[in-house]
Image (cartoon, rainbow, N blue to C red; front, side, top):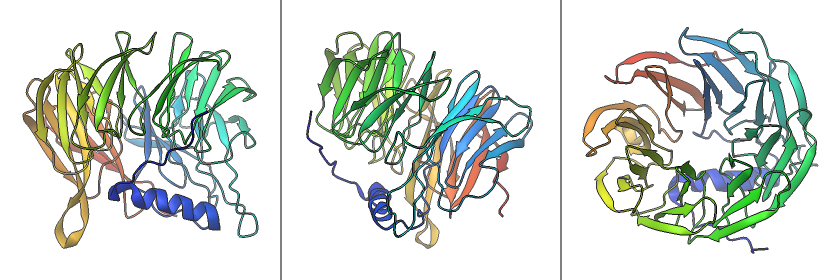
Length: 386
């Protein structure tokens, strides 16, 4: 087993990790973090944003439900919910047992997926005894299984029907990346610098590849190739079956978010605010450009246009702002740009002809909905305050 390797921390995420370590030790309330997790299904977005998870119908512009129904002090959510046909699976950030019991209780929940009915979903099952540290990565549902990566260095395989633990696999460091499932194989990336390929039915290791830096986001699979971001300032292409490295392409700083693939190219950004396009088959550079603010999320490719969120931009009165850009995928030229009042570190998502962006502004969830082609702001939403 590989020894744990702590990644060097950039200032933009140092607060997140330091706060996590501090709060785990003393059992204090979780500080505000601008890191909501967002998932989509049909016209609905599901956002984990700290104190809970909210489901919002974008087409009808109305909230459907929130979980938990009642406020639970100390309970927090940041990992994007996993949306299946029959159930929604989510994991929390852990709930402190108090000053005299500093170990956090971490729970995985399965909720009924009742679509756009607006009714509070029934809880199908939960497990608070299989994870001992925070769940940062979104779970993955595949057939009869649920795969959950945890900050206690483990990948868990649970039964989708009742949450029973089927197997677990230990990595050398925390898992922040959503597991990727494909044709009986689950791929999991870890902060230990390693990408693992495992048999989904047993957890047996098929292959592993060690990179030069931590991997904080999922690989992107396209045409049998895994495109893997890394803190080693490169993006790597691996054959999904054998694990053979096909090529690697450089960045100027950490590549945090999963790359986007489309139009025969791979698109990715780094935390120094640089954005790149390379050939998907060879890794040869196609174009690059500077984007103001750190890019820590994944770009969205849609019909020849890339949508990119960035943040940590110095604004008026030294406040940190963010932005959303639409770039032409052929040459990187700007189609439109919109400023946001807080950094955008969560990947934009598409609902119909809408682009949905989520962030926390002074601890309050903000959801902005833009028209894809024009960038016009068509709707904005924040959950009502208690």
